[in-house]
Amino acid sequence: ADAVDEVILGAANQAGEDNRDVARMAVLLAGLPHTVPGYTVNRLCASGLTAVASAAQAIRSGEAEVAVAGGVESMTRAPWVMAKPGTPWAKPG
Image (cartoon, rainbow, N blue to C red; front, side, top):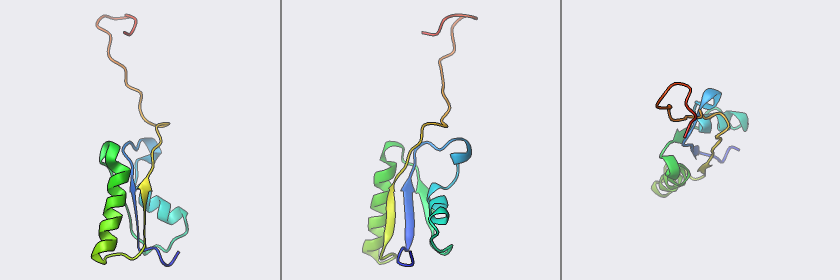
């Protein structure tokens, strides 16, 4: 745990109570030291890959020796959006 320098996670759709910094919450819930930074990136479908690329860049530049990176997604709390019907009481579609 003391070896981790940074946590970076990608998440495209955070909704409801999940609308927070997922990486920082992961640091805290994992019991890592409070001094370990964590940040979340949103690049839609490329969020996880962007997180991994950012971690690799931090390691290559010497900013970090060990970084945890990846992607997370939960569509359970995402809002469900439907097209508005053209007339009142019309069947969708």
